[in-house]
Length: 282
Image (cartoon, rainbow, N blue to C red; front, side):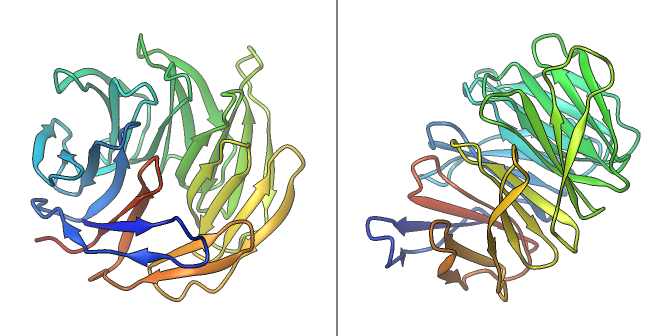
């Protein structure tokens, strides 16, 4: 796991500072996530644990154990009170941040759970995995709210819209589904965003409602999901970590500090730090 300070004052010139390693994992790092205030960093590892770090100190605060297989995804709730983690053991765990205690073990998937994401109001959690299904859960009770069926292959990524009324899921079937969560009926409708030619590995909504999708076809698509419009496509990925200007579509920086495959990268909420997770361990 690598940490790099970023100078973002001048968009045309990106300065990369020293790199810090978070190296107490005993397996590949599959996911990383910052707390809403940026002070705490989560990492999910193939060793079956979620690691909680002090962002600037690099000190390991907690190691959350309980999963019986590699941890594939992790995230903080937007209110900062909960952590969600998912695993190849087919389960999702909800953790209380203040007590570093597991509150719920959510079971409903039939295969590895590859992605978890909270709604902006922290009241719902989405999960998806190798069983080609996505599930929306009520956080407080752990009750299943929606079962979303429609992808033809594994679901690898998910994210709620800023208004929480829709959910985006990305799949190895090369499509992005936008699910309408406003309906109270058991069957939830969706529409497809088609434009990639490879597996969809990551999704992220902006605060304005734009949706970015990253794919194994080495492109990033930036969508207007409500209109299916594709205003921007970023091409030319020849190295594991790149930083792009989404207004111009230009690559600002290629980060060459990675020692191996980069499974995850994420900015702090203020955009000043970037963390990437690698396939190497230290």
